Amino acid sequence: MLKIKLALTTLAALAMLGCTNMTAQQQGTVSGAAIGAAAGAGIAAISGGSGWTGAAVGAVVGERSATSRAGNNSSKPAHCRLRQTK
Image (cartoon, rainbow, N blue to C red):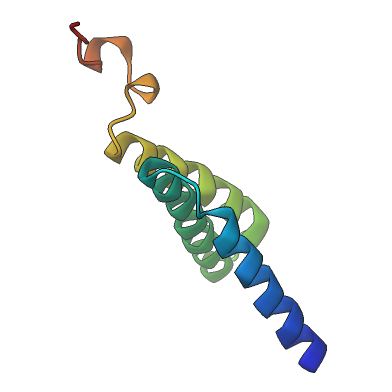
């Protein structure tokens, strides 16, 4: 049990260190994907589906949602992009 706690603590510390030099948009994208994966896996497990499939679909939806909320124009259709003037 002690080895599992140590491994989880080490993994959490490494995950936090990996996000220290990310921009706010990158952190939001990672957070959106993680929250989406957890929600997708939970919904799939409750409804009797595959938890892995639900996690994969949830991660993609969460990442797309976070990216669009951050104002990343590259994920929007051409007619929705703001014109950038110099």
